[in-house]
Length: 189
View 1 (tube, helix red, strand yellow):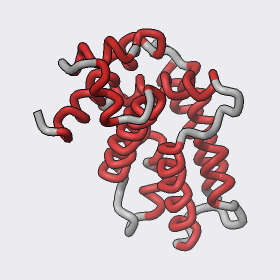
View 2: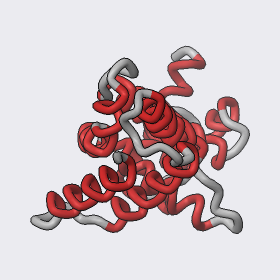
View 3: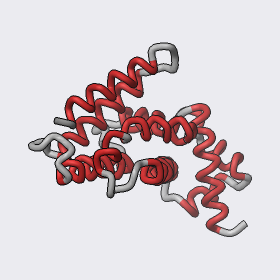
């Protein structure tokens, strides 16, 4: 197996464990077994278990951010792009269950530390929304006077917290419609 194949196998094994069982089950021994390598091999590719976890989370964010870009209307349609953001987010999360599960694990991982930083991958996710707000403002379609960076960060954090507490069920469509109504009222004149 090539070094890049080994690294990919380690990332896949760690992602499977994290998404399926959470942080507690993602031991280096189990990751190595899942990848079909010796435990020490992990440290030839990652400086630490934490570096491995961070690489798994970063890869999940890259996949989600790429799917977001592919799912949104083009930048030439700024109002449609901005209005589609929530629905596209939910569709992407629904079509990427492992990555979505990994984001929940990542939040738990970050909250277990002393500082609880913002997940690095989420910064690109927020930048996509920030750009969408700015483009819609420039086209005269979004509420003027909003700071796109502040609005995008607020929306991301609010929707993330709401999504983290939701469970699929009969009220989910009502909650999503309520979120969309709130966003429309906040973003559009």
